[in-house]
Image (cartoon, helix red, strand yellow):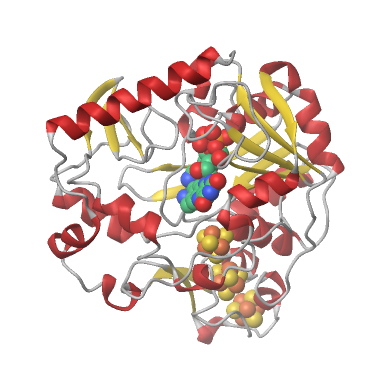
Amino acid sequence: MKIADRNHCTGCGACADACPPSCISMALSEEGFLFPSVDESRCVECGACGKACHVLNPPERHNPEKAFAAWALDDSVRTTSSSGGIYSVLGEHVLENGGVISGCRFDGDMVLKHELGDRPGCTVRFRGSKYVQCFTDGIYRKIKNELANGRTVLFTGVPCQVAGLRTYLGRPYENLIACDLVCHGVPSQKIFRSYLKRHRLSPDPDRSVVAFRDLKGWGDFYIRVSEQDDLVWRSDDATNEFLRSFLSGYDYNEACYACPYACMERTGDLTLADFWGLGRSVPFDKDPSNGCSLILVNTEKGAKLLHAVRDRLFLEERTTEEARQGNGQLRNPVPRHPMRDVFYRMEWAEIARKVNYGNPSPLRRLLRAGRRKLMSCLNRGKGK
Ligand SMILES: Cc1cc2nc3c(=O)[nH]c(=O)nc-3n(C[C@H](O)[C@H](O)[C@H](O)COP(=O)(O)OP(=O)(O)OC[C@H]3O[C@@H](n4cnc5c(N)ncnc54)[C@H](O)[C@@H]3O)c2cc1C
Ligand code: SF4
Ligand code: SF4
Ligand code: SF4
């Protein structure tokens, strides 16, 4: 039995799904990261786990042929998604045509897990990036069954999960479409739950939505908890320590700092991301302030799916070089933060002191709101 070592294991879960006697389970490290735990007394030394491990057997990857700036024309989708709402548009198209989609959401114990959905409208349940490591929870086996039954499956996940799916399957399937996300790295779910506890938040996932991005402006990262459209809590600059640590790379799974997928060679048929840096080198004359995605088209299958939904999207072709220049995670992994070694042993109060801006003065808040409004007006003036 040979699988990736702990420092290189991304916790994708493919080895666990591949083990015929199911003697691998995904356990949690002290920091809360997923890793395979093998019951060696039941291991039959078949080698299936090693074959399914994308670290040992990297799957084929593709350089993007095209790049687009894009967003959903339906504003209710665009403004409730993390970027431009492309995931929901692709997902609904697949569902309307009898296919199945994957997505992740918090279960009743606030554990983020992948699930399958096959009812039109179910993209809402999975919408939005959750900046923590997601438990794949047997999803690869379920996908293999659906594929074997001839259904189209759209899988979306971070690139190591797409890689895990491909090595688990072991061969290409015409009816599988995979979208990878450009990925910064993942903190553990344990640290996120402890952040919620610190702020005395105990959202009930059946009634509440926990969002990691703000709806007010694309590019704003704040934790929001809402219930039936009513805002229950929103972090501010003084309580945003979870997202600040995340964005600075304090708290990722060890493998993320040497991520082999932080480059232009992609594991998905399509890649979805924020279009950071859009218009910096070549002017862009639309208003992206309600959310703008980058779509990289990596395979013919990806191109076909995008073509099928073109009427539901604003789409403008850009260059792959502009995408690469604007998005650091298409060039390199996030460097390991010098505080990483001690981060998981630190108290939140100490972390907050190091990473938060503190409470901005009312004047600073006003200036910030004014600047946002001005940028939005200027962009709108350029023509929406
Ligand atoms: C951990 C993480 C790090 C990211 N880092 C970057 C980055 O550095 N740069 C960048 O440009 N974009 C990054 N993204 C991608 C970005 O946040 C958007 O998810 C992407 O642009 C798609 O947005 P959307 O509006 O089309 O759809 P959304 O509705 O936002 O799409 C959500 C999709 O992502 C899936 N998803 C959500 N959370 C997770 C998770 N933890 N693990 C696996 N799948 C998940 C959902 O199930 C759904 O399929 C990251 C996303 C994640 C989850
Ligand atoms: S070698 Fe086979 S039986 Fe043993 S852990 Fe790996 S997959 Fe399971
Ligand atoms: S298959 Fe995934 S979870 Fe298993 S050892 Fe490899 S990287 Fe880790
Ligand atoms: S940074 Fe790489 S290894 Fe870490 S979760 Fe993202 S894709 Fe996986």
